[in-house]
Image 1 (cartoon, rainbow, N blue to C red):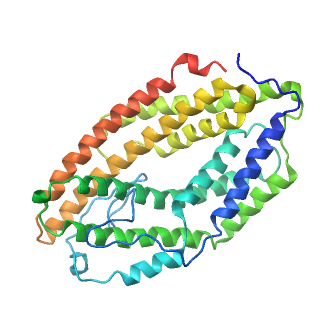
Image 2 (tube, one colour):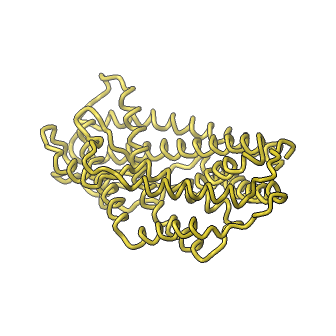
Image 3 (cartoon, one colour):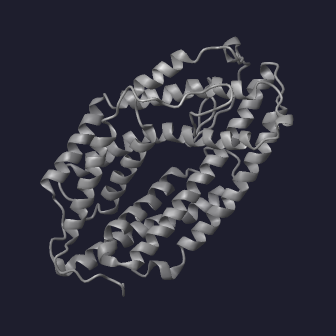
Length: 359
């Protein structure tokens, strides 16, 4: 890189250790939550919880969200505008978890460990990566739920009131409350399991023992560029595959975008850590990777919302409610999905420009 910063005292091991320490400290802070803090609740006019999957039914789910409703609406699935949400609210408060914050912390720690895997040594790395994958699967599912309901809220908020037929808000509240509580409780339960304690222990030991290669200042730029290049190549391959799968897909769980999002996040984080040495080239790559990750997330959210609306319409129809509004919302969701496809393709095109990768 022509813009490498010349800092003779900086080593690759120093930068990577600092990045690990910062993320492990954030990991500890993320679970030191207050259980009496107010949390979002659902009422007749607001859906404040969120989702990356489909409504909570007995049907099976795709990995990236979505279900197929195959049973009639049971009596308890029929909205009651006067029903109390106290029980669900108490369950969410009991969970006391900042799902979004924890998801971001886990993603950042995972990205540092993955991006600098060639430099990190010792017996704690392999189990830590497996435990991070386990924890992220649980937390990202809960966060994805929130993301999808955010999209539904946007669509519903922009709808002409004259097109609202039936208890749309109440049905959203009914379905989302149960699923949100379930997902948040799963995260709270995760934090009490031995696997979580093992994850934190391995992360702490990794920082304390600091088995990180690259301690010679004269090799710093070369070592860091090599790590960033490896992460970058993996992300480009994943991104190319994602565009091919995403275009024309009609199911929320297809394509599998989560690994591509992780790959792009790994590049962005790795580039940020290496920027003090690799300079503006690393900064440009970080921005492009962040834009790619954001486009992937929006594409997944918009598709999941469209899938939700199909299932909600089916539930409403089986309960004897008008399903017209869900059809209108679904048109909006599909339009948003098409825009997301275009944005994703543009982000991949920008990310794969050859001059961006001359590290």
